[in-house]
Each structure stands twice: as C-alpha cells, then as structure tokens.
Length: 294
Length: 325
Image (cartoon, rainbow over all chains, first blue to last red; front, side):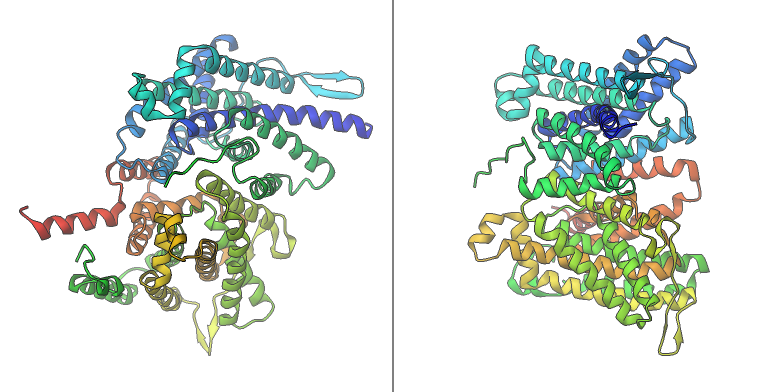
C-alpha cells in the first residue's frame, strides 16, 4: 500500500471517528450553552440508550430500522426524566454543583447498567453487514462509511430543528437569555426539558454508532466522552459549528498522529491539542467570551 | 462563633471553644485509633489521611480560589512516581519526599500558568486532559515500569523501620498533620484572604492590589505540591503503583470529597475525605451494588444540601445557637 493510499484511508477512518466525536460534542455544547451544565453523565445516557437498542435487537429481534428510533426515543425520555427528577429540584444550582450532580449520575447510571446487563462485552449488530470496499488502492470499511453518513444526517437534522422549528428557535432564545425568554412568555421549563431530551438523543446516537467499533459495555463511552469534551472545548463551548469543526479536526489529527508520529501517544495527543488551542484562544476556535458586567 | 464579627475572629486558627473541643477530640482519636481497631482498618485510616491531604489541596484550589481541577490524580501520580525514582537512585527518604513535592510544584506552575486565561468548563477540561495525559505517559514510559507498574518500599528512617501498618500510619499522620496545620494557617493569612478575594470578585481584588496572575498560580503551585506530597505518601502505603491506579475516577473522587464535604471550608475537605473513604470501604462489601449506591449518595447530597456536609453542620449549629428563633 502506497503512502498516499494509507493517508486516504486514515482520513476516511478519521472522519468516521470525527462523526462520533461530533455527535458527542454537539450534545455537550447544546446542553452547556443552554443550561451551563458540563454534563459528565452524557456518555452514560448514551450507553443507556444503546442498552435499550441491544435489548430490542437481541431479545425482541426487531429490525434495525425500528430499534434505532425506539432507542433514541427511550434516550429522550431518560433525558427528560433526568431534568425533571434531578436537575430541576436540585438545591445546589451552581455550575460546579450541577457538574458534581452529573458526575454522581454518571456513576449511578454506569452502576445500574452493570447491575442489569453485566460488565461483559456484548456484540451489537450493525446497521449493515461489514464489508471491505476497495476504492483504487484504498480499502474502506462499509460500517465506518455508513457511520460517517448517519452522523452527518443527524447533524443536519439538529441544524434543521434549531433553524426551522418553533421549538428550535425557543431553544436558542433560552440559550441566549433565559430570563428575557421567560419574560417574553416562553415556557422555559418545557424548552429546557426538550434540550435535555435532544442532548440525550445525540448521546444515544453517538453511542449506537460507536458500539460496532468497540463492544458494548458500561464503560464504552469513557473515551469518546473525553474526546467529545476535547472537541467541544477546541471548538468553543458555546458554538455548535465549533463543536463539529473541533470534532473532525480531532478525529483526523488523531489518526495522522497514530500513522506518522507514535501509536503509543495517540491517545494523549488530544490533550496536547487542547492545551495549545486554549493557550492561543482561551474560548476555543469559534467560541465567544462571556461578557461580564461589573 | 458562626459569623466572624471582628477581625481577630478572622485571624484565629481555631475559632471558639467548641472548635477546640472538636479539634482536640479528633486529634486524640487519630492518635489512639490504631490501637483500637484491626489491622486492615489501620491501612484504610492511612489511606484516609492521604486522601484528606489531596482533598485539602483541592479545597485550596477549588474552594478558596475557585479554579476547578479534574486532574488531581495526575499530581498524585507525579508525586508517587518521582518518589519511587528518587528512592531507586538512593536518595534518603525525606529528600525523596521533598523531590516529589518540588517536581509536583513545578508541574503546578506548568499547568497553572496556561490556566490563568481559562475559566469554567475550559479549565475543567484542560485539567481533566492533564490527568489523563499523565496517566498515558506513565503507561508508555519504560523507565518506571510502564503499564506493569512498580514496587514501592516503605522507608527506614534513622534506623526506625516503618514497614508495619501502624508505624507507617504514624509517619503519615505526622507529615499530613503538619501540612494540614500549615494549610489552615495559610487560609487565615493574607494569602488565604487574597485567594478568596480572587474567587469572589477577581476584578475588585485586582483593583485592591492583588496580583491575579500571582495568586492564581500560587494556588495551583501549593495545591500541586500538597498533592505531590500525598503521592509520595501514597506509594509506600499501597506498596505497588500502576498508572491505571491514577485514573479519572480517582480525580473525580477527590473533587467529590471537596464538594460533598463543603466547598470553601478546609474542615469540610477533611469531612468529605472521611465520608468518601468510609463510603468506599462500606460499599466494597457489596460489590455489584457499590457503584450505583455511591452515585446515588452523591446525587442525594448535591440535591439536598448545597453547602455540603460541613455546611449542614454549620446550619445545625446556628439553629441551636439561636433557638427558638
């Protein structure tokens, strides 16, 4: 295999990882810019949705086309419940307090998954049977191509939701100024609940697309979650396009480092990128600084 | 004496007669306990002391200065590994501990200076990245045994062997007690007040002549140095360290200790360290339920008491003091 083919292959697999990171990062940013919560339970919300899909696929033997949407609906319901039962009634509404709350939720959800489904690795059926497609000298895995495409479709769906629907516009309004949105008569509580649901759906979609790459277990999303955080921070925590840009940059760079520099330090490389980007631009590539009034 | 009414109250190390009684009782209990409990509990008590040091260091950083760190296991690991390398090169015990503290402090500068420009989520993720990066570098570094880890011996100082659990407990108690006393002193000094000023209103603090860059970096350095000391004590305690042991979950637990104990209060960090270490110990008996219960307890504390355990204690005290009003 020539060097150029190797590069092309790395770029495609990098883009497929980038799609997963982008979905995670989008969910994190969507929630952060609206609620100021750095959601550490994001990965575990996704895993919970994937376990629902796994049950539907293997126990009830539903086709993928039915199980996938049902799992997303289940994730949305879990997201809403988290908001209604935990986040809203919590007495500690500071940024750090809510962060700790999601850390506790992550531990609890992970523990619940392990208790119900066990900690062993499970094989999740894929959307399509995996084949290797040869394209010139480049061999690409069909699953990674489908993953990238599904990721892009979901991102477009989110963009359409935020741009063209009433709910989307309300979500953006609440993200901008919650108090003004409330004064204008927007049902802020419902909008926040919808935001949690949308974030959970994105988490579940990311986990479902990621599951074939690894195997399903309660800790599956630990690495994609930390990379999603990195992508979100690179792009800027309050910028949705930034999250996507950051995710693809990270996904491709990571594979290039694995290819040309060192496979061993591939994983720690992401955090070097974060430090460099943040030193140069403390609010990410596309993020804006919060205006502080004194 | 809940509210500090006069400047002298602010300056006191132990505030009020009640606090003297509590501090005295706690000290006596810590001194006497190894003779009252069984062997493995002495080990866990030592672990509590080490964790309490990290929780205190994090309390200085997060509670007093308002800078979040999700990577304190990284400083702990740095301290532990520097200690091992130093002892392997034949440094005497106290010098090896000093080396661990110094290297961690330098790491604190390395992380603290870029962090000056960061806040909120950006700082949290940058420090989280630091913790994970330290773990991964150690995993791939052959000099210190890479992922297999490395053995750590307990020290012999001036002919006294600290191999036994009880003997090592007293060594850790002496060092941890000394540093705790220093941190409590730091909190009531002008430096501690400067820390709190930068946390509450950084612009106003700067207007009053507090160099933000200087004090924010100082907080990071102090915090890293104390965590490094904890690492140097942690290595010989567990006897065998692996990079896997310094994972994200440990960093998260340290943050939980400070917040669950009561953010912004140094005694709260001690309380939180005791609470979380004890919870871990109790939950280890029912394995498969432990993580779920742990998470549920954390959620419950965060939902019910914003000020943490120490904050609740202060409220109870206030209630009885002003009862029946």
